[in-house]
Image 1: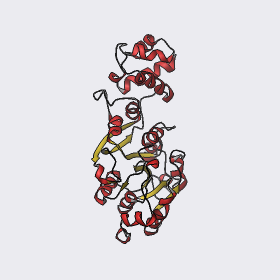
Image 2: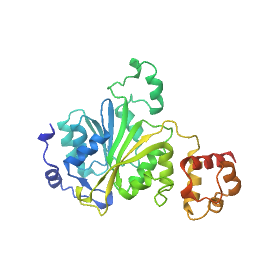
Image 3: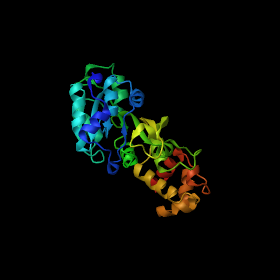
Length: 307
């Protein structure tokens, strides 16, 4: 049925969908690329896909063509008619939600449209119950996943919101997302990549396993951005090391806020005895933030919570 849809460039021209910089829009017209991103998000058996910022629907078409059921969240009302055309070609498989993803509880949205998807934290319990009928979704879906070419101006904020969600793990079993390459490198960084390693890497490394799947040339977009992009995959860790998220945020903010200083100095901004805090966490007070791995920051957060 995808063959019956008009070319994306024709759709964009018909509806006057010039990409708006204020919305962080860069449209994907390369069918091979959108198909590759969709394959990276698969397989789609029993899975609901949430797409943020679909625009005229290039990636949306690829996801649907490969068998996904999609909930598309679009802030730009100009794009809705183009998405509605796609929905008409895939009856019952595309749900369009007009709204700002920054203001929407995406997990709650999934439950609204597929109310029987279990929380990821319930999955192991359900699997061990011999997959009884009670574990089967009313509409046949067992999991949810986010796949998106995120608007670049809000991409990091959205990711932080999703990874910091409580309770954890959420309903999503994977996130396949497009970022500017420099941001992607910050997400997957470890202390070995000191220049890129920071608060975002600690948060993502604590709750997920993140990896870069492939890079995307600026030429693939309309209009072309000035930088290369990367598609990354984040797989939630259902049992991350125990610590309080707020405490972790405080210690990483203090440590990376003055990343060139030794921790015994940078952590003074927490208003506690930095040397005692580091000793309780078992960390050398002469270390700098970029030398501390995720487990070390978790230990610092737990030591802070214990005070």
